[in-house]
Length: 242
Image (cartoon, rainbow, N blue to C red; front, side):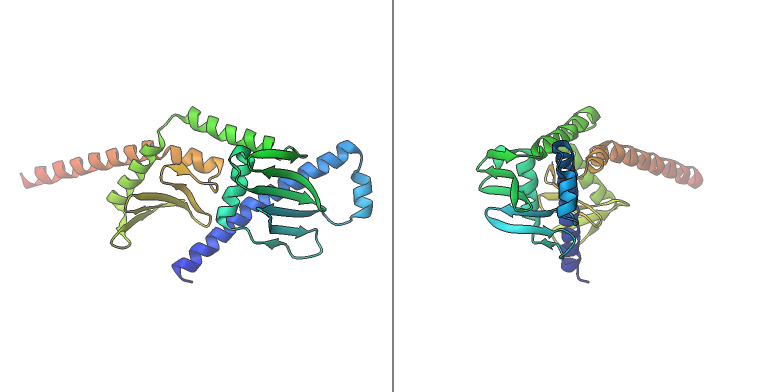
């Protein structure tokens, strides 16, 4: 498999994972609503399979899950996943329309920054999740995002390798770090870019953010230890020569 094919496969896996989490949340919320409204038994009697879920972005059907009867159609690109997540995190930024339907009935409808309906409280849940991530970043207080770029660049300079004339990289145990001219990216293996040019991407989990925010301190400690080892070796060699 070529690098391009491998990257495309990773992006597909990443987008699918994000959408799967959203669909599971929708199904859970939908079932809770049925329980609260006393419609669960009626739903089970009339629909033995799971609910049909459809996602539309700017009028285009990009996701269609027809219960358990048919294969799920997922046409979402990475840009559309980011657009969908952005609409849930901050609806006011939505350009065009984002709609989610269950059994052909809209349960979420956002158009040009206005929330027309949110029957399951999806936006509220996403906003709380986003706020939790922001609080985590503030509480950590380990470093600014610019320091992450500096730390990653130091790793590449100290331990990395040259991929091409403009690209250099370093492969760690969990993440790979890449410098392409002025652009800096951190990739999570099998999931895609989680940090790019000073910002976390939509693929970054809470654990990704926590780990990456600790990078500057870890790199500083690692380089300091290396400097001590170099000094000790230099001193040993000097003593041996004397």
